[in-house]
View 1 (spheres, rainbow over the protein chains, first blue to last red):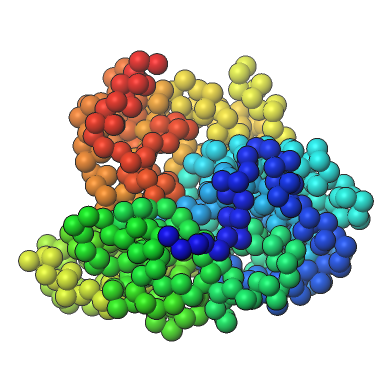
View 2: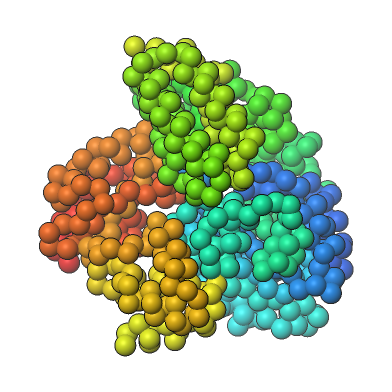
Length: 415
Length: 151
């Protein structure tokens, strides 16, 4: 197996996650010290030059998010929120970081908080991730004792505290504005944007929201500099990404590699290839709110922009490998059921639309009429244009892509 | 009495509601939020009962109906389904003699479905209360259930 390039997973398996000294011995909290010797704008500059983009799925420039938030924070009390509500089907990268290297996330958050002049951070972890919740809580307690969290950290003028907030079972709360509603103790309903969180976030204050994996890149970027970081990955998406490979491969699991890697390498080199006697039919990239591709994309380099050119998405880094014996109608049906279940019901296009998509597709499965697929795409397109939040805007991604590559297979499966 | 003691562990701020509801639900032998518990939460946080009920019924981990001592949550995400979670459901339904959403007569187990548990590398996976089980086969599932029955 070729070597991985690990940044967010650099300590995995090498430290005891419950022992802060292990983390410190591996150079932990050095980046925080370095950051505190610079001014906060320099940190944002470094993140911008590194070209770091959100690893949660949207791929937005992390440096710009920092800047937008800090523009609103002078004299204004703001927050850093870590989105650890990992729920995209096929994704389990944040869980690995939180379970195996909780201090890396905490150090990243402390640096992000310093960059945007915030004083309080929240880590919103999905309720089902009980070990993550325990480990992060212990790491916070130990970091407080060690003086990395609290008042006037390491003799600087920077004070920051972090609190863990568990979710309670809602995919939608992974959407940043919905997450804020949940953090405020409400039902997980999305907010209308703008305003964006950088302007009005938690309790109406400027809020920087970043994914676990994104924040876990902060310490290495600050420590080694942007020039080091941009040597990895592609021109427009530098750095590394964790991919979680699942489905019909011999060795499902997680790998962190430089962006620009191909699906052929991820599946063949890192996941041990297809299971015995199985042939590759499709890959679902980025989870349920992701896109299907076929074998023609196996040698295409993976990056946020590069995939966009092919109307595909990298998303959270989920690589779901589907074999030739699996019915694609079953896979799409499970995705449409998922959206229907997770739709919160606040806006009509999504509430009615998710149900309609499922009804239409069920009819297609029993009648095999191609026109129903056209109608399915039409309805999903309408939802993407009119829904309030990314949930209702997402079904078009798997629907359009499966029709592009596998329309014929879907029809054949119904006969 | 017990409810009051549990509530005191949290500051009476509305943003603590999920933690409070988790704590109350876990403390109840039947793993659910009683009307009385929700009324106490409303009083403690100084919010309406309907907002407490609204939160309790929005999130899938909470229940306002009695459940078993052990909550079995089987993942029904696309990956687990592709790797035949239906077989695992059938096994559990057979062994426990319940349908999805039901509790066994001895009030020991409740069978539920859940969205992606983030254990796709070990699909098919399930949770029993806070413990995870992956790479499930019908044989393994039967062993696990027996283990819980013997506890």
